[in-house]
Image 1: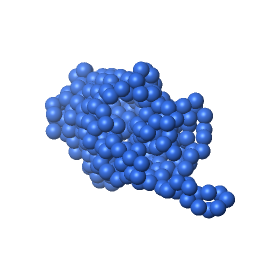
Image 2 (image 1 turned 60 degrees about the vertical axis):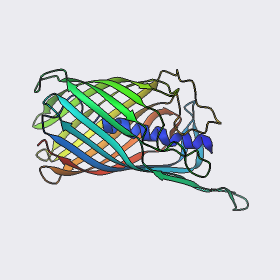
Image 3 (image 1 turned 90 degrees about the horizontal axis):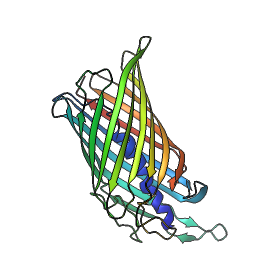
Image 4 (image 1 turned 180 degrees about the vertical axis):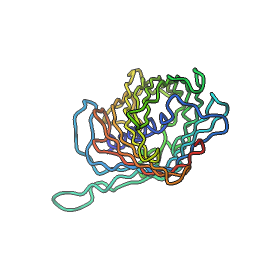
Length: 292
């Protein structure tokens, strides 16, 4: 049971990584802003082990409510925020297949999650054909590090971390269809014995219906340095595991209802993983784009 709880946080990290890379190498112009309120969830009854094999587990789920924002401090410097306003982690009862009795009672934790605060700086001039940007993201442990009946449910990892990242990209046209492509790479420096991570990925998007509809595909990969001093074991009581790795592909749809207000939906799944749920995650949200 304790091992299963570890999986919850890894999925949360997957979603966060995709959300925070949404801006690409294009800082907001001074005074421009983008805000998104979204609900993300995953429910799973099997997972990838630390050997990348699939094992069954008690039905487990997590629901997160995120507020993401970008604001242009100058034409080349953008402030970013990703706050997990509400997180719910739960496990169902474990029922005996022969007697129908509850072997292990289900559990749940409701609280704040962790917060990420960052700055993105355009290394190239605004309007460059191939823009490049550098960013730093600070992970602030505002989540709860222990909860539930056994005190082994968490909505945060209890550690400060710093992600240093480079983004590059370009815009293009396929006939009359506008689009963009970007890639990123970075290193996540962690504390409290957690392993550092190498992160990379990218996204491609195209616009239809007079730029009201945007279709986006995202790839996110995390490779662990495996230098943590509290590596995951089967008896670990932490849901935030060390030395985790995954590759994820996500598909996202964004639709502008008005010039500034829109809705979004996404689907994400793991192409490979270690200590990660073997089930897709989903997200729906509403956004306000004050840069159009």
